[in-house]
Image (cartoon, rainbow, N blue to C red; front, side, top):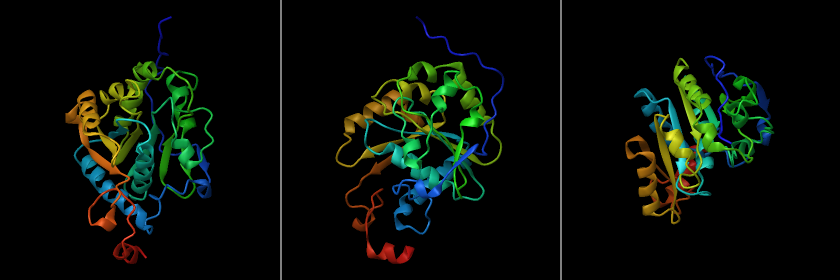
Length: 257
C-alpha cells in the first residue's frame, strides 16, 4: 500500500513557549552547554559564535548530522542548543528529526510518549503541545520517541514541508537546530537537506574516514555544509589546538574558575 501523507490543516505556528517543563536536575551530566562557568562548555561557546554569524547572514534552519552512527552528533546538537539558549537575545529551538532512533529526549530526561514523529504522521495535530523546556533555561525542545516509523515518508511529506515553512516564518532572532539521522543510515538526511539552510557535519577523531566525509558531502550537497566538528579529539584544548575535546589544561581551568 502506498503511503499517503496526512493533509495539512492550515498554516502552522511554532510556539517558543514550552508546553511542559522538565526538571533541570535530571538533565544528563553530558549536557554542559547550560553551564557557562564550566570549562567543558568552551568548545560549544566557540561553535555558538559561528552559528550566530550564520544566523546574521540569513540562516535559520540548521541540521546537525554525521556520516555514521555513534560519533556524537546528538551530543553536539544538544550541547550547542544549550549553549545558544544562554544568549538573551536569541531564541533557540531544538528538534529531534532522527525519527527512528531519536535520543534528544534521553539526554534531557524528557519522558516523551508523543513527539515529532506523531505530529508528522497526523496522530498529533497540535505541535505546540509536544514542546518541552528545561527548568530555568530558555531552550525549547521538540523531541521524538525512538520507534519504528516510516521516517523517510514522513520527512518527504507536505506536513514536514509545512513545519520547515513555519520555522522560517517565525519572527525575531531565532535559530532552529535539527538533530538529523546519520547520512548512511537511510535517505532521511538527504531528504531534509533539501529543505534546510545548511548543515554541520560531525566527525569522530580516528573513526570517521575521509571517504565517509566526502561521500556525505556529495549526498547532502557540499554547498550547504556550514562546516565540520571534530568530536572526541584526543588532544583537546590542552594540546594547544582548537578541537572539540575536553582537555584539562591548567590555564583554561584557572580562567574558568
